[in-house]
Image (cartoon, rainbow, N blue to C red; front, side):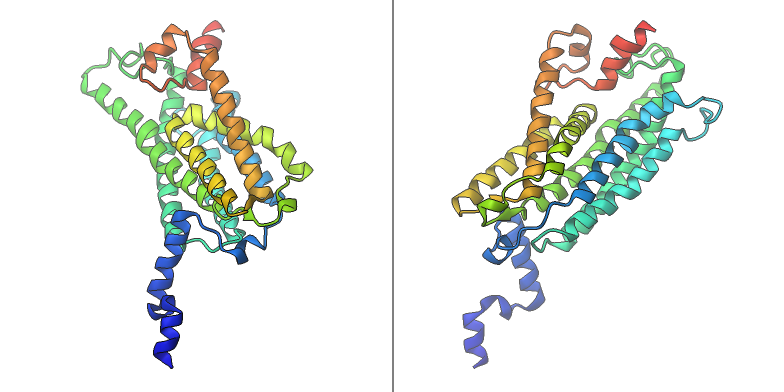
Length: 311
């Protein structure tokens, strides 16, 4: 009898290891079971609102707060107010991501989620240190639209090995920190998105509050993609989401309200990035700083070149 039961349910023969492997394969290929699709989650207005608010205040607002608050309150040899914003972001964002995963209508592989959260915190913390020093250099005349070696306050440093140290700091800030921060961030969002499908066409609608949040959410992700220089990661995630939507549509499944909100926000982000690039396409100074095939200027580079230089 036991052998017959195992032949009918082969997944049960492998115990917890086989079940974990099945869960991983299901998450990897983005399949949604009929039972999961039949129970669409309601729109998470509270979480998406908190996401939008803390992103704008703690991430976008960091460098602005650093420039607004008097320097006497936060001396250059101490953390700035923006650094404290970053510390709060490094705690609140992983918490919100975990709460979002908890509300997913499908079971996601916990091991991948936990490892992603750990790497996210490590990357954001590395970025905190590098970004803090780089933004404090603004008060000494550092210009973001120039490379490290071309900056007037750095290129004449003696001994020249100090310039290598600043380039290492820039690498930790703009490359290693960003990769360890954003790759797990977008991975978690995509894994959550893979469960945002419903078999009911009537549930594939966004409520009014969701429509109001799309614009500020899409605008923030525009800032994230351009300032973080992660266009390749973003476009890969967006087309992976699009491919998953088309794949699930063949099965008769539709995006629920949360999936529609996330997909619409990313679509708006892609449009804004395209407009941003088109506007600055012929800028000779920014073209020199971003010489590669992917030309996506940073907003802060634009600010130091065309705004702060006039004052």
